[in-house]
Image 1 (tube, helix red, strand yellow):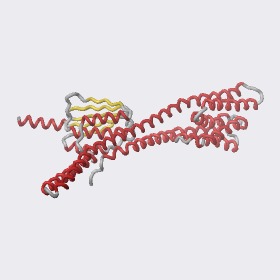
Image 2 (cartoon, helix red, strand yellow; image 1 turned 45 degrees about the horizontal axis):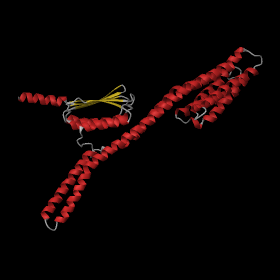
Image 3 (cartoon, helix red, strand yellow; image 1 turned 30 degrees about the vertical axis):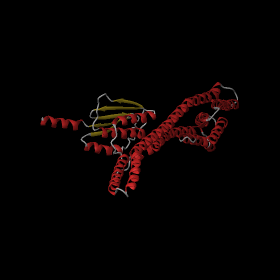
Image 4 (tube, one colour; image 1 turned 180 degrees about the horizontal axis):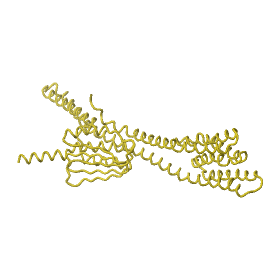
Length: 396
């Protein structure tokens, strides 16, 4: 069975980048659901158990707690808008119920409103500051109502019903605004990275199309001329016509071989051209590239070194969130180091596995290793040339 053509590899780059983005969001959601959701549920349950005095009060407070948990769960997947109004309405109704109907039920009744309000208000598309002020005024107004319903004025009631809940509302909502801004920036960066990866994929496709055109364009034109010449010679010089047809046949065979080498990644690339192509692709994706290629350096065998660089560049774009790539070229190989690799999920690089066999067959060693969030890909042919030098020294 022939190896799978290498040409379509750029076609999956955008999909894999999007898949990586979705995987990051899923990990973030799992983290919130496994850490914060049980914490919110536990604290809310303890408050209900401590302050509810009848089963009716338990039912009302549990409804508020469920509204808070549902809002938080929907927030983790970016779908809060669907449940924002009902959850906010339930939690807003539980707050005055606890103030007026439950003796000492301030914390349990306010708990759900604090969670839902802090989630909903910063997510509003506009008038967020007005909504935040309105929420604080509502909390303070209900608290003042509770102070008035208590009868004789006491400073402790003012603190418990008004000052503490209102202050917490202001603090929690205010802290959520920069938090929301942080996640917005992260989302924008993720989208920008996906667009840049799409651009890199387009560049890769254009490069492949250019290589294919270079191989086939001239050949097809020559074939057309030779066939036209053979047709003219059929009546006057059959031997020359047969020669033209044989040359055409051989030319088509050579073109098919070159096209297969290009499709399967076996066409001998040029290291200098691959370095320039890698720099352009990575910089188009917003990655800083540093290349150490001293003058006079002649990395051998250049075709394998260039193929390793090409495959490594593709892997960086596909499987990492790199911000920096360092390429160092020597006379006996190349080393590429990039950051931005997920520590928990190291990528499976099948393309490098295939190249490692070819490098080993040529007397070199290809290593691909991860250390923290950095990934190092290196190919070294020094042992091959050291052995050649020893052989030549012995013969001398």
